[in-house]
Image (cartoon, rainbow, N blue to C red):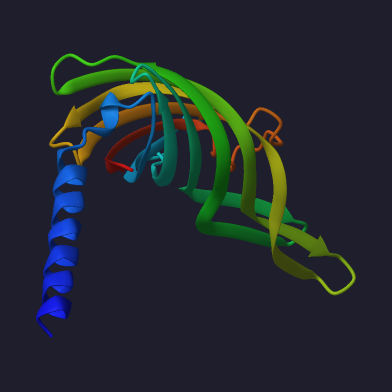
Length: 208
């Protein structure tokens, strides 16, 4: 019984030592280390409708970042942009007005550079990926005099670039502010589709 108790105490002691060592380990001191986190913010489209209130939307993003020697990194980004969608169409004697949301789900890879000044760490990045969009659409059936409401979906090239600053709260958590400009260059040019624009986000991440 005493031997089992001793083994149990040694096991607990070993776990405490490992946990203490991990807490004292600074991930940034490694040659390669990962960050995982997420951010939310506001999205403002480049194209605005003249004479109307400024369109705004939201942006939410999750990212897994691989850092090399603290300064260089590559980031896998997965996020969704949502923006107000307004469209007015006339079909012979029928008028159609849509006031809804347009969405783009983006999956991309970005490369960047960052440099530390104490707890502060400015960074820049640029990348590309795929954007899966969903936009409300209408069509008119002349025979039945019916307006059909559907969703236009497609996959397009997504390009983004931006910068920001990290603030190291501790070895375990990093708060950051980030601004990104993004564009979907091959998206059909419709006045009601505003999925290219500028995002301002705040987020938190943790070194793994």
